[in-house]
Length: 321
Image 1 (cartoon, rainbow, N blue to C red):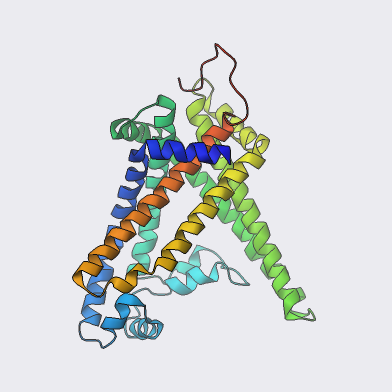
Image 2 (image 1 turned 120 degrees about the vertical axis):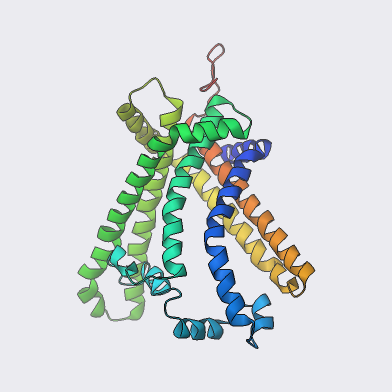
C-alpha cells in the first residue's frame, strides 16, 4: 500500500512519464483509427442504424457487416476469444486467417512490444538518473531499449510456453476425463483450476520480468547475467509486497474502467459538441490510466529497493543518487 502510494506520488510529480505513455498509446491507436473510421463512415452514411450506433453499438449491425465484408477482420475475434475457451487455442496458427483491421491489430501489437520496452527503459532510467524532463526520458529509453527488449521477448516466449503446456495441453489431456464427469459444474471447476494456474504463473513471470528490469538499471556495477539473477532473487524475496503493489494497480485500473462505464459519456455524443466532449473525456481516461501505470512501476521500484520498509543508515546514499 505504502509503495504504491509513493509510486503514485512520483507519477503525479513527474507527469511527463504519463504523457509519454499517452503519446505512444495515441500513436498506436492512430494506426487503426483511420481504417476503422473510413469503414464506419462508408457503411453508416446510408444506414438507419447510424444514429443509434453513436450511443450504443449494435451487435446485429456488426454481425451483418462482418458477413458482408469477411476480409474486414478475418477470424481475429474468434481466435482471440478461443484463447480462454475451455479447450484453449493451439497456438499462433489460430490467427492465420486474420485479415484487414484484425491483421493490422496484430502488427500494432508487435510495435507495442518495442514501445513498451522503450517506455519502461525511460521510466526506470529517469528514476535512477533523477531526470525530470522528456529529454532524459528519451535518452534513457533509447539507451536501455536493447536490454529491456530482450527481457520483454524472453518473458513473451515464457508466457507462450506456459500457456501451451499449462492451459492448452492440460485441456487436451483432460478432455476425455472431463467428458465423463457427472455434472457440468465439475467440468467448469476443472477449467477454472486450469485458468487460475495460468494466471498465477503469468503473474510470476510479470513480477520477475519487472524485477529484472529494475536490477538492470539499479545495479550497473554488476555483470548482466548477475543482474538477471539479482532481479529474480528480488522478485522471490519480496514477492508478497510486489504482488500487493500489482494487485492495487490492477484494482485501481479496474475501478477506473468501472467509473468510465458508469459515466456513460458516449450518450452525449449526438452533436458536434458532444463528440468533442467524448473525445476529451476519453483522453483524460487514457491519461489517468497512464498515471496509474507509472505509479505501479515506480511503486515496484520502491518495493524492491525496500524504501517502504527499511530506512537507509546515515551516510549511505540511496541507489541512483
